[in-house]
Image 1: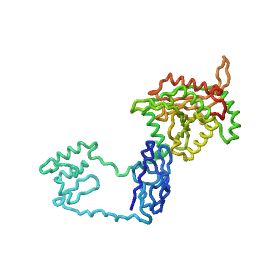
Image 2: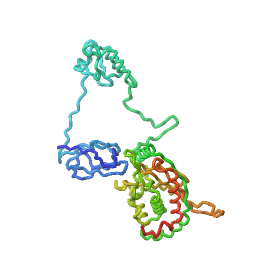
Image 3: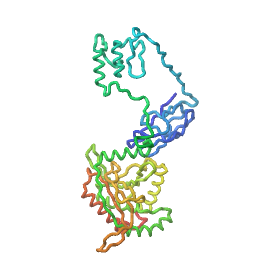
Image 4: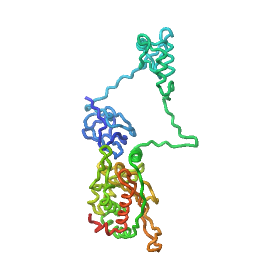
Length: 417
């Protein structure tokens, strides 16, 4: 008995995925729960296990193909079973008919009518010829003439309803390797890049984006980080500025909870989250992945540093679990390691806000009417203006800067939560 295994609904609103790799081929004997394929969704690469044991009879998709939830991935039969090959159907031999014996075929394209179909369709040769010229399928029409006969008026009415009467699309679409100015490359929109494109478009179309710019003097924070790096190295942890920023963000969100929320448009409610799951955007070769630090408020500075390090590596190796990408309440994208002064990050919808941190650098600043060199961290916060207003965001940023500029308020001990 054959079984059709369809691409299952893996949750989180996933509707389709791209076949990354097949682990089986036609004729292979497989066991129940054996991984048969890796499929990339807009969340992660998932290993798909077979719900059946048996023989792989058919594989419906190739690698790089897009498969939608509910479409058949493979056909599996009993062990040792072979798929019965249906004999190829030969096209009917066309016989030349005289105009009197067989009127001209009137079906669009290459399909020709059989004698039985011609007898059933009541239309004169002249009407059939007109239908062919206008690309009208006579089999789909009901005539207005006697005994349902199709007349010229019926053909003209049907032709008027077609957007481009008589226009034929080319059977094969030819894509050139050049445009008017020179040679070009065509890169398929697939994988993470495709998912990123969809998510960004969704965010921009649904949220009212506004970006607030500020900066923090992190001179003292830089000194503390240098001191703690030795202890972190002893634990095998790379201590960057990001764990400090996560701590500061959580402290500011506690005072401004509306930025740690989502908007339920259907029920017209703002859902304020009383926990802090912080998403960290990771730059991978073909897009962005945002793994989430769960309950970050309960983790120490070194624990945050270690988790950020592990999640970033798993994201780059494409070994994240689906759970690692769920449940975010607020996101941070760290562009600083690459450079830049300002940015307008796109909200990780349906969250309400995202913080971009730019390049930390020594810059001249005025302090007590004297020019001094300070270590400056540029901050850019994009927020959904439907949920929070600019004044509230300004207050949030003031508090965030306060914590970053006074790390003593933030950190009692590097290894305490």
